[in-house]
Length: 468
Image (cartoon, rainbow, N blue to C red; front, side, top):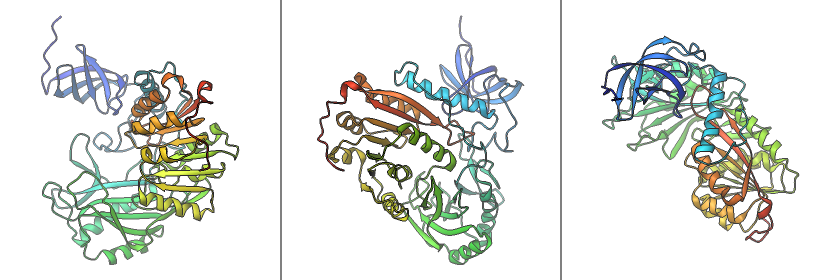
């Protein structure tokens, strides 16, 4: 049978069967795949084709003929436009089921594992009002009004927001009102096409347990007239606001933050209580965006490891010590490895603040530091960026042969790739995989994989045991 030739702009009928890793609905028509944002498995819809390829197409929902039983009314009035969320129209229980399946599929298809032991997704206390950090690009409307929001998916059209249902509600007044202050000050909004203007982004951050807030403006240069006066006004207006900072990003880049941040008023950090410890968090510090989910996943890690107090532990990609410090309280010696000097500086201060003296932090790339450890730790924690572990890290772990590895991943595709390498020839076995939902209403899922060294390898270490 000859396939019909699809044309851009054509209307077709599609039944959505699945969801892609990026959050789009996936349907089939005429033996070809169609990706449709803002749809739900079970939807039957009329779709307008917007990008057509020989074997697939991207479409736009034109008319919903019959809704999926998993479809709900979004909490946000611009959910179908704003690119900040993909799944507000999907029942949350179904979101969790899809995310668990994403982890299983990645481990089976990429990792080659048969029936991997993947638990149900660790669900947070709320699917809304959870983000402790939001960074909004700024723009100007056709009438010259300052806007802040997220870009419409697949475009650079800014969707203006005065509140966001997924960020902590205590940040909403700042989102709505700071734009007006920028407008009244006459500060120019950055134009990325012409590389002109001054203010690029508005950054908001809150300690979920302390309520302390930070406000940061990302600027092209430091010359922002009147910022000191305005910063003091913000501190007076918002009692929970403890610091106002500028971050300079003068490059033509999509990166949000530049390398230098200056505190203009108040203090350069907020205090947050995490897992019974107090942390200082700066505007540009990496800290999990859903505090309560991070604490719940830490509890799973602690329970699964069942640490007895005699272990040597290495936390690779340790950041400011978010996992290192709570785990250090349960082992003999802990070492954190981190490539960012500023993060290590904060980690050391956080250890001192909490009176934890059995931990050492080292600056450098994990692939360079790990082979020089001169020790065989019983436990290694891996929490790499989205690209996963450098191959040299995997090779070193296979030589080092720690008894247990916990791999915390923010991208299940690279998790599956790296686990396949670690488990090659049966050296390690996956004992448990715990997915966790750090980003409800989006297609993003994280997971912690627990690995145990096979009995065949336990007595064949090629490193000499020494103290860390």
